[in-house]
Image (tube, rainbow over all chains, first blue to last red; front, top):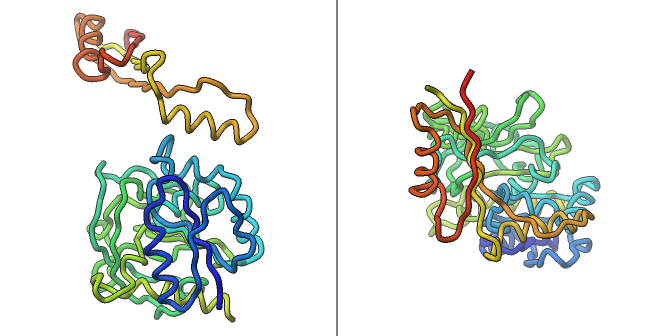
Length: 223
Length: 80
């Protein structure tokens, strides 16, 4: 069974539910303290939270910890690397994914459900979605306003949309360029996303739409 | 008259600055011999005023700093 490391930095707080979601998706998952090694795992998840209390910039301090050198090896070797919310911020701060996550356009913490359009189903994390499928997940962040100088350089995976998949200014919760909610690297083995798939991985949470992110990742390792 | 103002607010010496400690540690992890890193706050703005020094001093006391734990300094230059 594929084994995944869920990295825990001081201030990470979505680790337990991320582990649960991976288990439900058919993988093994363990929380791994950032001072330990992740080399033996098949994939790695950087979960949400407030690593290092968001000091300096969200994700900036975690991005410069030694364990990120091992994460970089995963990136190079094609093993799956998933960054959720603060984990996405860590991936952009470390330069593994392009761009930056700025404070929300309206400067406050946003916590609500959004619709996402899956615009790339060829990544390790979206293979089980239908092309152009509209899914529902929660967001919870103060710094999710994705910025990139040249959007043509990014592989966009999720965009904030309405229920029907229309991508407009009204469906953009935080001011992100092109309504970007999640991006991938060129190889498709790294995904960073602001919405929380682990908080949409069981019917009693209000949606199961996020579970396929983890199922796709587990299947990708098994393939 | 218009002025360009820059205010720097610092924690008083001896007070714990956790953010400074975390950033200092991160720089040391990157191999730099950094000590005593502190994180002051800097504010830059344009101000229309006939008595800019008096008003900026007031701003520091009323909002930008907490006189109990902070010290502050500022520069005020006329806008050309």
